[in-house]
Length: 394
Image (cartoon, rainbow, N blue to C red):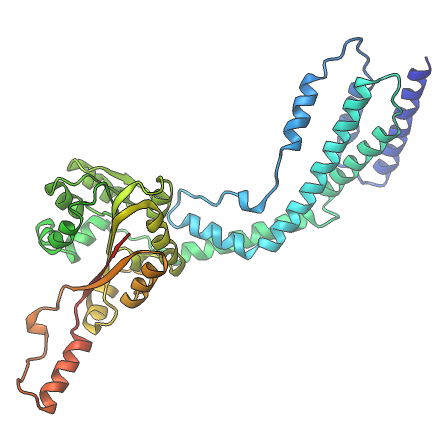
């Protein structure tokens, strides 16, 4: 009877505190009913209570880790992953503040559960004062979150508004053409036969590098060249229509974002990686990320082939580069070669490709005089090779 009297007194104290906070407007509507149900559960008496489920839940709660680095930033939308990473950096301090509050709340819940479990395991020898204190701490923290008095709700609302503004800005910058990329490539990159002729030499460099991953494989012309050489190869392409066009020709192509696809592969699982006219489509951080990632995925002796528009040629800047609205910025060949060296590639070389049409180049006047020298210099600057390839060996 004494134990029952103690428990009644505990319940009376809790009810008095709830009523005091209810009158002050600290609890949202309906919380009294929730508390009544909770009190009945605490006060319930069972001769042989089963504590195992509660113990298991307590172990699970103790193993929970709240880490900002564990927040998923993947997205199925084009450019969504890069946007989410940008948002995560921009609001990192606010996010950490919210996580601190959630950690405090989780600690209070865990302490309350420990006190409840101890009371259930020893109902006749346990005093309930600590249980009251722990439950009260949980209720205060919960009420704070509901009211937003500690800034938690306001902070979350501010984060949401900032994310919405960033997403709106990203949508405004994103190129969403009403024409198909397949029609664009046919108009400006040439026929399949033209591309076969243009890239046959690069494909030959990968003849002994199976398996090869072609990132940004487009319609699959480079994959077809590798297939002709008997090289096991697969591709990943962001545009579903281009990927489907390649798959219809029997090529192994997946729809997806290249860096994410590459990152999911096992280290040292590839013999070759090709990126034909891809890096100019990447943001600066994407260029920085893809080179060391390629180094991780290539086995020793593996080959990385990256071709891009030559920004040192004014002819290339005036023609192929700015024709494509999805180009973000040119990547200097010296910089791309530098990244390959820094990422640990053993041998790195630059190969100049695709000279401008002869009829566009200034005529060589011959001789060694000043006029001939100036013409050659102009041809080097204005009519330099349109493309370059960085070829790096692991």
